[in-house]
Length: 227
Image (tube, rainbow, N blue to C red):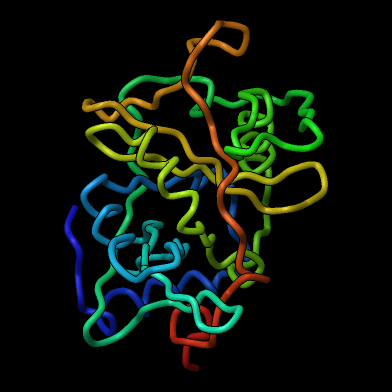
């Protein structure tokens, strides 16, 4: 993967096409992958985090993500778009081997109160949320446009991304909130997950993303495409 600057030709059309869809099946678009180099570049310097948009390629009829850097302006985390900025196109990359996230199951998900400081979640919650997303039908592209990941969480992401990168699975919890579930990848592109839900493991899943809507930043051609 490499960063791009063709906003008008690629980034904006991908987001616009996704948001024009009205009958999306969750199982048709379950995750995106971002390389460590793209993540490091987008989150460098004066950024407040990254925002990952969901997109649809009308030519190949495939789903893709668009990762952009954000900057803080007042209380808003605004996308750094247009000339002078870059973005990454993220693909739904098949995991080399099946695991608890690629074949999620319905589980009882109990979030500790207060939740862990590092925003990690149990693997039961991770698989439960991913399973709920997979069961969704009739999703509107305007109901979930993107996920914002704050700068303070990116350090923790770097800890799990290792040499290759990370995978972001889409989910939905029992309250109906859209979720992004972050897991690390090894150098072969395999998810860093336990072999099953009861096995001891040092691997973690994280609940990092803040969905748009409602955390969308200022209006731009990604979150509010031109007619």
